[in-house]
Image (tube, rainbow, N blue to C red; front, side):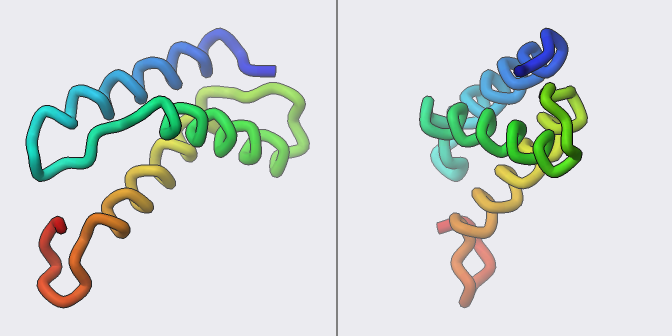
Length: 82
């Protein structure tokens, strides 16, 4: 179950990711990323043995998504965004 606050945070995070996509140097978010954020949030809640996703779970999912996206988009030899 996703709490109202967590759902609002998920929507806000996804919209913010979409807005960042205006630049050619930043990867734009797709509905698949939203699904991933939801799954990561649910998994984080399960790790806490909670049946409800809370805003803290969403915050951790967003942090993980940003780190993974930045890592995947960075050229290891130059350190610049690919």
